Every structure is written in C-alpha cells, then in structure tokens.
Length: 605
Image 1: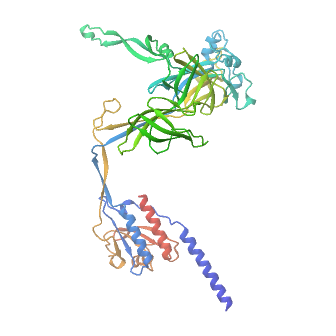
Image 2: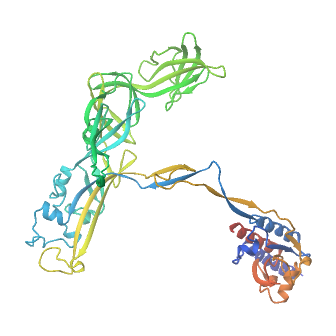
Image 3: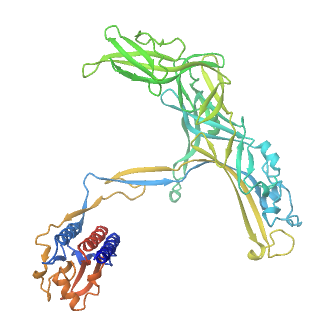
C-alpha cells in the first residue's frame, strides 16, 4: 500500500514539472498575414470561436484575443494639418578650428624643400616602406627640412576661438590662442626612434606652452572691398559697374589686422571700475583698477529678496535674509549667514546704491538697488551681490575645467586692457582636452603608389619598377569635442533653405477607428462548417471546441492537441475557402499561453 502511494506521488510530481515547463515556453506564432484578421477598410475579417465545452479560462483567452484584435480595426486617411509646422534638422560632425601639417614627405617636399632633381635621378632613394621614411621632413617653421627636434623647438601656431568671453552684458570677446613646443610620445616606443613620425602617439604640452590672450580694448574699424553694383549688358554695349563698399565692425586689434581693416576709433578702451568682464566665463565686477592690478569680486547679479524669506546668493553658500524694508527711505535691514561654515553677520542696513562690505574682507558685498511692494502685498528688495572680492595681480592663478592657469594682467591705470592666461599643468593625451570643449589631436597618414601600376617612373631612376613608393604626412588639429545640431521650423508658405522650393502644405495620417457593429466572438455550434462567412480563430483543442475537433477528424489540423504544450496553427482554405487559426494546448494553462503569444503577435502588426 505504501509502495503504491509513493509511486502515485512520483507520477504527480513528474506531471507538475512537465506542466510548468510547457507553460514557461513561449509558443511560436506562424507567419499570419494581417488581412487574415482585418479587411482593407479596417473592419474585422475574422470571428473568434469558443467551444461550448470550454472552460472559463478559454473564454477569458478569447476575450483577450478580441481586445488585441481591436487595435487593428482602423483605417488612415491623409488630411492637411491646420496651423502646423515641420521641423527640419541637420547634424554636423565636430568642426575643425585649425589644422597644421607637421611632417610631409612627397614629390613637392623632395624637389622644392630639399632641392632634389628628378631628371638627375636624385629621387632614386624614394622610400618604399614606413621604416625608410627620412627624419628631416619635419616642418621647422619655414619648410619641411627639419628634424623632430627642430620641429618641437620651432612649432608655434596661433588660432582664434570667437566669442568666448565678454565685457558688460553683451559685447563678446575672442580668445587668441598660442600653442608652442608640443612634443610627441609614441604609444609604441619600440617602433619609434624619433626620426620619422610615430604611427600613433600622445601629445605632450608642458607648462607655459599654451596661452590665451583676451583683449578688452575694442575698435570701430572698416573693411572696404570692390563689388559689382550693376551687371554688364554686352548686347547693348553696357559695361559692368563696380563700386567700393565699406562695412563697419567692432573687434580687437587682432580681429582688425586679420580682416585688413582700417581703424576708425576706439569703441571701448577696456574695463573700468564699475564694469564687468569675464575670464574663462567667470564674471568679475571691477571695484578699482591700478597699475597692472585690479580689485574685483565675482559678480552674482541682482535678485529679489522677500521679507522673512532666506535666499541663497546664486552659486554660493551665502544666505541673505531680509528682516525689514522701508519703501519711503529706500532701506533694507538684512543679515547674512554661510550655510556651510556658520559664519553670520550682525544685522545691517543697506541704503540704495551704496555697496556694503558685509564682513569687511570682501567675502560678500551687497548693494540695495530698489525696494517695492509685490503684487501679493509682500515687501521686496532688489539686491546686487559680489563675492570673493580680492585684488588681482600678475601671477595670480585661476582654475578652469580642472586645470590651473596663471594670469598676466595689463592695465593703463584706468582700464583693464588685456589678460593673458598661461597653462601651469602638463596637458597630455591624444586627444588632449583643451578648455573642456575642444580636442587637440595628432594623427599619421601614409599612402603607396606602384610604378608598374601607373606606368610611370616615379623615382626617376630610369626604370619602371614593380615597387610601391610611399608618401607620408603627420598632422595636429584643434577640433570641437562634439558636433552641432541645427533645427529650423517651417510653416506653410515658407521657403526651404533659400531654394525655389516652399512648403505647399503639411499633411498627416488621421486614424479612423472602425467600431465593431456585430458580434466578433461566437460559439462553436453557431459556425457553418461549409460556409463560415469569415476567417476563424478557434480557441481550444478538440475536447473543448467542436470546430477544432472536426478539423482534427478530417485530417486538416496536423497538431497533436492532446499532447500540445501550447500551439498556434495557421491553416489556409480550411473551411469553405476561409482560413483558420487554432489557438490551443493540452491544458487550459497551455491554451492561455498560446493566446498570449497570439496577442503579442497582433500587437506587432
């Protein structure tokens, strides 16, 4: 007796394991065309058939399939969108600001820079491999006749990045960058002996070899050029007419020189006390200017402070609390506290347009600019703030993007005229990060050409050999780190990027939902087997669904539903010329799993 019980339990455990395994497997859905389910006009082309002997779970599965099928019951029609616009976008790769060739080995540099004579056969030693590249084709500042050491010692280039700093609120200032004495460090030192360029290398820029010149003296200047103001009409003997046109600009001395401009006058002599300017994007409020020195604080702008509402000075740990305001006397009673250190001031009175050094050390300077009553009746003070006020002299360092830079300050006693920043850190890598938004890159290129392939005596030795001759180049470039994206919005009637095309209309697909007008789910005994009137989805196997049973008995269905782990069978021309899909399994759970697989398939359609 005990033996029989143990055996029965063992069989039961095996059956449970099999059921779990089948239910967890995802049934495979055959390729069923969309028009099996829905007509071209968005109406249903199928009915879902539930067996009269079906379990409640089969009915639920049929309902789930019906819901999934509903997502296909629609049509689309194109309509013109009203008051709409289209957005067009262009993506540009990172721009190259400047590029320098530092090594060039080719016909021109052999014959022009090195003076070799092709007709005299002096190019007979033309390199055929990387290892044969000569070491005296580096650019030495004049031509390609230097060694690597010559190049390092003579390399000095300048480039300009526009509109990086500013004076006041609007006037933009350029960065004029000088880069010199750059070195190379091969990533495979064993293959590079310092003669020809390394195939892959890091750049090394030691301290003092990157400078950024920021010029705050701006000029009005003009640039004149000749342009055609009237075209020629030769058939009538009318000549073209030209005139000199003059354009006006504002810029620094380097801008004016680069444009070939003519100075008209000084637009701005620099930055005086009471003005603001930026260095590496940080804004300074100038309190006084001395002999190559100035006193300034970081300008945090003006903010509104409501009585009794503590508020931080933007970007700092200082909290300002306005205790009281006198609208008539234009005064405000305030207290200032550092949220990190706990340092706190006494109560103090701010008077309109009178700066107050809160702690007497330049840490915080507040200036009351206005007092007024807000729309909600609250008293509000408009207060300007400067923090970290200090005197700056040449040799002072600042941190930008994690790098340390030394300032060299030039003034004329009244105005700050320019500031030069010099790197104090070694910059290394490939690419080298420059100012957080630019990359300094090195790369090497080599090309080959076979004399026999082109039928020409490339090296001038009197014979066309079946040998490759090489040319080689090494470059350094300053590029943007990231590309840019340009977006334009166009409405009806707008021209497309200054072409002859314009937006004539904007159209969209409008979805027209088709409501179900008649039952989509029927019982098996309602189906006319000779002419069902539509395609059918049969939910349940031959035990639960009589239509499935008929197809099995007729040999039309080929699935062993009595042992099925959950299957979906697609049968074309199954009943009266209509197609049938059977969704079933050996158990209710397996039928449910098959129904879920079909629902997922419908979602994909």
